[in-house]
Length: 104
Image (cartoon, rainbow, N blue to C red; front, side):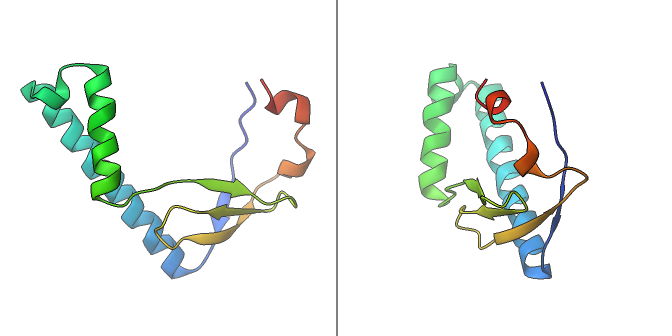
């Protein structure tokens, strides 16, 4: 497996949106762990937990997603948090990553 690490170059508002997104994910994770520990109906099986997180996604309006731009130097977050387009800072260009390896 090949792992490439990058930093993101953005504005203060974008970093604040990322921080808020991380807080939402931590909150949802903790609610799921609590349901599993208490063995509530939502925490009895993996299927039930998956359904439980789907309810959270609707309740907290947390659609998440991203797309790498064709230039390989920018990433666009389409998560509803307002992060938007950010520049990738790294030692290798994602555009030079072999296409055949990314299909595995």
